[in-house]
Amino acid sequence: MARVPQSGRMQDLTEFQKNILNVLVGEGKYGLEVKEELEEYYDDEINHGRLYPNLDKLADRGYVEKRALDERTNEYVLTDEACDEIRDEILWRVENYVDGSEERQSELLEAMNGMD
Picture 1 (cartoon, rainbow, N blue to C red):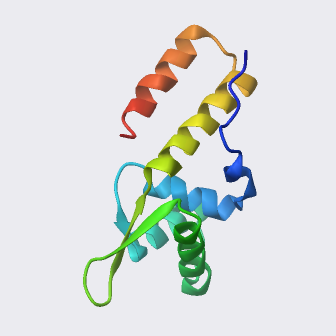
Picture 2: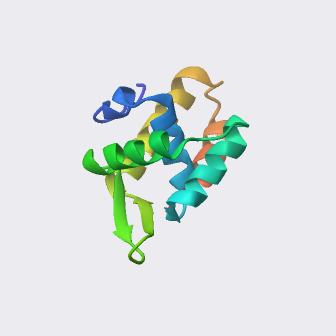
C-alpha cells in the first residue's frame, strides 16, 4: 500500500516556499544565509521583498520557527511538523515515482535519518 502524505498541506505551498524549507533542512539559518543558498540554486538574485514575506508565511503556517538572534537578525528553524511532512512527501514521491526497489528505499531512509 502506498504511503500518502499525512496532511497534504505541503501541496498548498509554492515551489519557492518548498525550496525555502529545503534550505532549512538540517539546521537553522538566518535570513541572509537562506537568501544566498536560494540565489545559488536559482542562479539569480532573490529580492528581500520576496524572501522575508515567504519566511513569515511559513512561520505563520507552523512550518518554520522564527527566533531572534539579536535586535536585527532572526534565525529560521524547521518545526518538527515541517520535518515530518517533508519526510512523508519524500517517501510518497519515492514510492510513487522512483523505481521502488527496497535497496533504493533503504538508501533514501538512511539519507533522511540525517535530517534529525
